[in-house]
Amino acid sequence: MAPEHWLDELPQTRARAADDDLSILCADPYPFLGDAAVRRQITRLSGHLAGLADAMRRRVIAYSLYVRQLDVIQAAATRDFCRDDCMRPPVGCCNADHFQILSLADVMVARPSQTAMELAHVIAALQRQETDFELDSGRSLTSGHCGCLASDGCTLRLFKSPRCVHYLCAELGGSLTERFGPAAASFLAAMAQVAVQTITTTADFTDPAILDAAGTLFAEAPPARA
Image 1 (cartoon, rainbow, N blue to C red):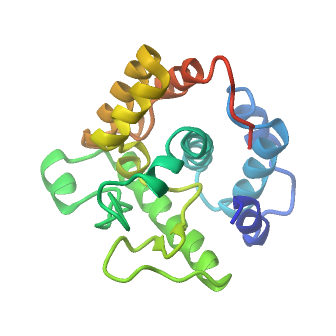
Image 2 (image 1 turned 90 degrees about the vertical axis):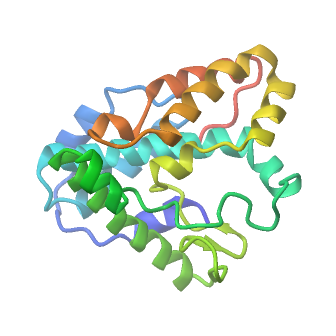
């Protein structure tokens, strides 16, 4: 289901327009999103997350815009492979709860910053809301696999975890190299680095270089913006 349906149903705790969030967040480029989609997403999440401190709310919204761009990229470049050519059907890499952002080991050993832990906590709550909305809309979870995996695909469009949204299996990497040639190398390398790194700061959640590399992949035929 398109994420707009969930965004439009989010309870709003702030009546006024999200002017400050729009002004700050719209200053960044979103090469895979249309302006209307960006403004709608910022406005709805800003109103829903009004109780958060300004800086944290904007981190959460920025993360959702980043993930949505990766969703557009994956729809154009990887989703067909995962659906039709996965070497481990029917769930492939969705065989565990990779939606979880921080493990106990991450917290005890890596000791992520307090800000990174708060960001993970807020994203986890939004994951539950996004999944619950999809289930209430008639989708059903696949038993024994990822807690966000429905029988017809992932329930998350805006708040996948960094590990999940960046992971590409070796077979898929080979398919991308065959399809896009040398242009795939920087995209694959950047995705792999974020997928396996331990989160210690909020900067570890995203890598803007991935979006630049994806732009190179689609230089001749850009995907339709969300």
